[in-house]
Image 1 (cartoon, helix red, strand yellow):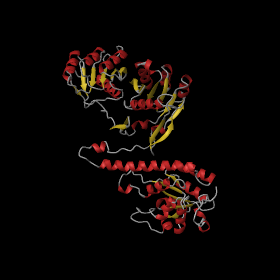
Image 2 (cartoon, one colour):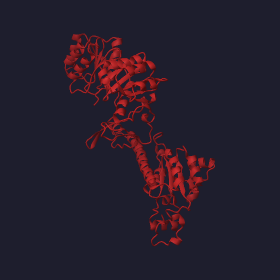
Image 3 (cartoon, helix red, strand yellow):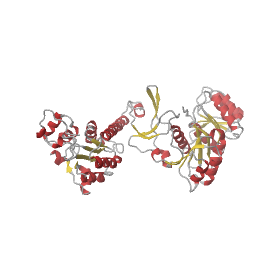
Image 4 (tube, helix red, strand yellow):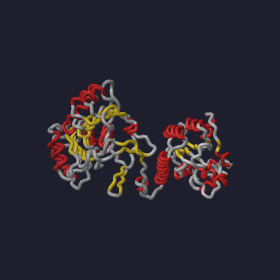
Length: 535
């Protein structure tokens, strides 16, 4: 490529720094970062490649201390730092050098007239507003630099993520400049970053505002969701559907920390079901627990004194439905547990906090296509975001669901009180029921599901399915219903299944009738006062 045509501009009078493709002019990078990760290595590499570095404040100090030559912004612009560091890079010499269109004769002439050098690379990250929200954490200079560089990405590279430094240096080393495709990709990332940053500030204002109802705090007037693609999946819900996993921009979630020990690439449903299983198994307390998920619903859940027993009991709930499902445990899988899994129905996915020595080999020998995943147990306590669901061309948003940690707020409404053992089963059944699609009825005994009726259009059918699956195993156990029983037939169905205690939200106009039916059948019944529909 040759020089850019300057049209009416006298090329002989125009300094060579105005030539877009000139390789002998000094390249310049402006570096101003809060997160100093990798900045010394980046600065040193650029300096060794002959670049001039412009920086200020903490960034300049770090580079100078490391022996990297830097021109201070104040020296570069001729203006001192003012207003408590609020005005540093906000200067025409900086922004003209970034924004000048190197393909425009008039822009090049202006650079020449005013003695302004072009800036070829902008490396910036912002004050961490999320970590310490407040007025002084609202970055002005950083986003302004980033937006200017991203707008002029035809000529300027912009980097907001330290993870990009190595690749940027490698490309500049190999080619002398960043390619157009790289600059465009970095610019897109930069605009997404500024959008996410502004969204965090907006959310802070929303949280600080009050309209007398609290609605704006829980359900803000505007919502901006900014996600970045984390991985392309094998396929979507069906093989003909493309799919990818996304994460909140700039965040590292539980799925970034996953280790896959075996099996094909993950699909949309593999991740969806594994996520459901992981949340349930860590919602059951600290005792050894196992959960089997099929189509986003539990088909077997158990808590026991050891993991192998819990796993075996979970499979026994519904071994037919367990085929091709996802199994999750809250403990490291040992050899006895692996023996149970190998001898049970084929699992598409196994997810656990870890695996004892040789357990993976044991599982792979019998289950070659099973995806064996390892997740950090700490990821089970991730912050719940508002729940968003698409409807046509709009969205529904609700605050995250909450679930009572125990039965302390429940009310026994029958003459018969549940025993301590029955109460343990009632709490267990209620927690499983809350993770089961509505209408849902769960029968449990000895902290093990024995019958689950899910996704039914009426509660009576859900109860019938649960009882049929239990096949007599619910005797002396508990029944949980995610919504109130509108009629006494549901109470009789549970009593016919042999349960000793029923737990339900209550709140029906027929509560007196259902309480009377429970009393007639000698069954204890408790009202939770909270409905747990899940659609």
